[in-house]
Structures are given as structure tokens and as C-alpha cells.
Length: 133
Image (cartoon, rainbow, N blue to C red; front, side, top):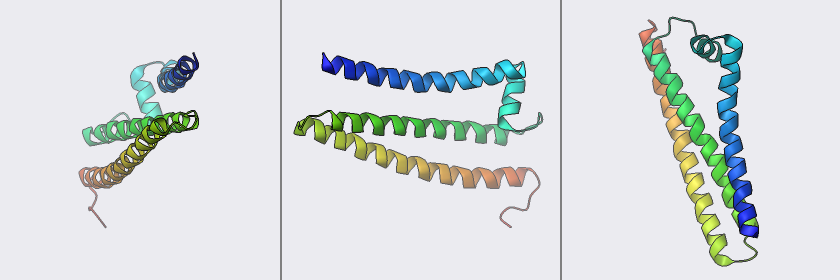
């Protein structure tokens, strides 16, 4: 009975996070009038954006979503650890999940830093900049 309550509460939290991610863009679309206007408004870009800027936005959104998954994993493993009631198997599973999530976060941050640097250079080069001045 207690495990079902815990699983249902974790599922509720995960669904709430995904609902919030879906509801915010919907509210922007409703306020802007169309999907195109909402995208332009939320991104802060002009209507004549280049393909490199679109790719940059998509990559940053995906990396941001992966960061949300990291937070959910840390909360989930911490919750499992706190509710393990001294069971060493559950504690070791929670520790392994937490270590894997932290390793994943490290990879995500490295990917974000590399992507930010590379896309910044590409966008500057395609807009007539001088590269790495």
C-alpha cells in the first residue's frame, strides 16, 4: 500500500513537470495569436532568423530538457533513499541512480558549454563577424 502511494506521488510530480513544460508554450501561443508569433516572441528573435539560429535554439531546448530530467532523477533517487527504511539494497540502488544522474549532468554541462561556444562562433561567422576577436 505504501509503495503504491509513493509511486503515485512520484508519477504525479513527473506529470506535473511535463504539464508545466507544455502549458507555458501554450499560454504564449494564446497570447501571441499564432504559433509563429509565439515562437518569435518567446525566442526574442526577428522574423528573418537564419537556420543556424534555429538549430541553436533547438539544441539549447533539448539540453534544457535533459537538465529537467536530471533534477527529476535526483529527486527520485533522494526520495528512494529517504524511504528505504535502512534497507541496504534500496540505499545502494538510490546511490547508483544518484551517481549516474550526476555523471549525466556533467556530460550535459560539457555538451552545453561546447555547443554554446561552437554555435556562438558559427552564428557570428554567418552574420559577417570576424570570428574569435
